[in-house]
Image (cartoon, rainbow, N blue to C red):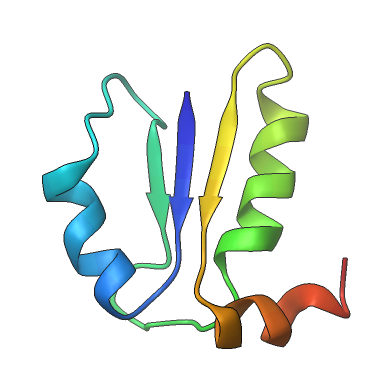
Length: 70
């Protein structure tokens, strides 16, 4: 499974609440705090790992920030 997470509380709590194992299992925006990161990252992870489940965790504002690009 690959989990992508956006900024805000989602970015803070996902590493503690969701069990992800192995390399490239949790992908987040990093220290810059890029809003709208989770949805495009989830699409990219689905192309990179076609056999794995992909979950993108984003809030409503983060989804609206990137929904027009997808």
